[in-house]
Image (tube, rainbow, N blue to C red; front, side, top):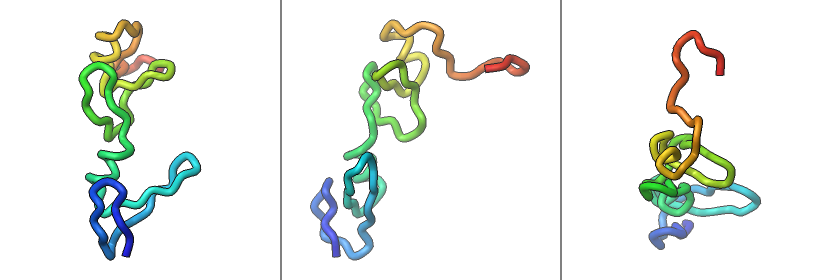
Length: 83
C-alpha cells in the first residue's frame, strides 16, 4: 500500500502522478488537485481545467486575468474569427 501525500491515508488503490521530474502519491483525485492544482491569482480558486495564463501568472478565467490588468484575454473567439 502507499500513503497519500495530501491526507496521509495508507490506501491499496493509491496512484502516482509524475510531473516535472517528481513523483507524487495520492489516494484520490481530490487530494491530487489539492496538492498540485495552480491557484487563480485573482480569486484564489483551484484551476482544474486549462485556466488562463499570462506570462508566469495563472487565472481561472479571462475575467480574473483582466481584473489583474491583463489586456486582450478573452474566454472565447467569435465564430468565423481566426484565433
